[in-house]
Length: 132
Ligand SMILES: [Zn+2]
Image (cartoon, rainbow, N blue to C red; front, side, top):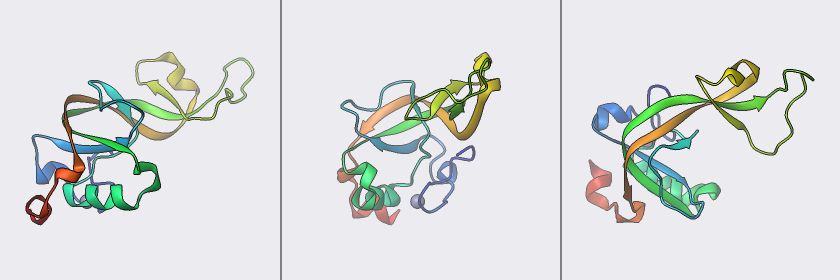
């Protein structure tokens, strides 16, 4: 994640294209928004096609070219500082690096804030893009 390697094949996406990285996210009813937080690493275009075809979480997806994927914080299990018990919830809690709660989270993932987003339709990638 911190080196922006493709989450499918491990290719260095910065080496492929230093200007922008491709992010494919689960569709939650809206396109990838400016500043959207994600625990998903980028993918390279050929792997995007594979991911949307085979990953159950990406049956419905949105995608964007992102110019500045900024390190924002972590996601994990948040603990209550008074009870020392995990805060109930189904999802991992996202906490920014400048939030005092960062001291009370057992982090499992890095969180990026996606800046400079341009929506893209993965199905538009053709053999030319894939062959690059
Ligand atoms: Zn890849």
